[in-house]
Image 1 (cartoon, helix red, strand yellow):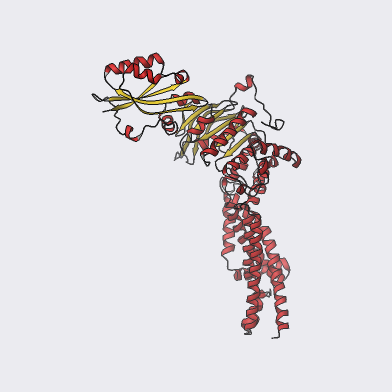
Image 2 (tube, chains in turn blue, red):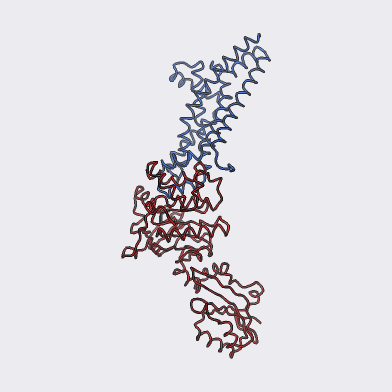
Length: 222
Length: 367
């Protein structure tokens, strides 16, 4: 394969991966964030006590998380078709990716919020803050560094998941590696795909780390 | 000096209203957990106590005595199982969620571990209760700056908590607690995480705030030192009950309950040396000696009583331990002496004590 051809293939696959990861990441986190906040604050004696709903949503989240991604992709094909009008292609692949992101991110958000010292919630209650004010003015700002890291971890996992959506013609880097590198036995394509993925993951991780550190005031020295 | 008297009004003055206690606990019981079948854990058991207006009141007890629960009943962080908690005439248990939030804005609270938001600067931490109360940015600026000055952190407004020392963090906590101009300040072991020197400076600050703003202070602590330094009134709590309460000086000089004595002995330096204590017997020993604690305060603190003691009782008086201290601003001394426990000496000693009005306590007998 000529370098030009390889470059074109890689370029197209990478833009598909970025598109899938970007859209699924944004949508999934936007939906996952409130679910995570709810999971972290709705236990007995917490800010919005709703222990039954907490249990039910917790079970659904666990069920979604324990379903292998490739099975999820196939299982929700009718839903995917309902949403996008098709069950194959890059846009169709975004649906299962988003569905997989929601519970993943929600659990990370939950643990980020649960990490916050209970004393801060007590202090906020003692100054007359409402539960909603506590979420907005205490929990979210205090969890910000952990939330940025959670988003980073979610995006990195999404890059991995996106390699599997070749099964429904989603395209992307993983698909390129399987079809050219493995099925056509072109090790140079496989190597190029792996290298691009490594660079991509590294970039996402270090940007995330840097932003998180910027927000983190906990152990900053003068 | 306080530069912001306009934002932090000095309300309580003389008059009939000031006679009503700031906080009144009436038959308060608090149980945790448990069901009809199981009683659960009783943290507070029949508390009747009034916190005087405008004073600094200390509630002291060992850990697990129920003092944290007690202070949390005042701003409704905990709810009483039975009985009533009345704050400035308002029954806390009868308030709606909104009413409770309004009440909490009139009650400041400071904590052992400060509980400052790490993501906010000192300034923004103090601003938080004002934001929560819906104050606009300009008014917040005008309120927060003088408060930081008041607690001595005018130059640290832009610092984050991680850049401040423990004492400075507690000062931010105090400024935050004062932001909404409360009439009552609750202190939950506020100095327990601080070193002795910093503790003193924080206590000085609380004392000054009490004096200059006329703010009622209710503090809980396990440290006698704290109560001794700033509290004018004290209540001793043990296993969910208030076992002794009154003016700090009275309680400290003449403790009646064992818990009070135990708490006092480690703080006032009247704890007997181990070698003295180990030989003590509860019953007189023939030909042995009696060990007596003499307590000096008020009038007696300034008289040369030890010299007279030797004159009256005889030369065989031995000083075993002693201390001179200050409680709630008054001098207080304690001296442990021993002398022969033969009837003639005991008789002379009794007469001397009666004549001088000296308080005594027989600790035991030694061979």
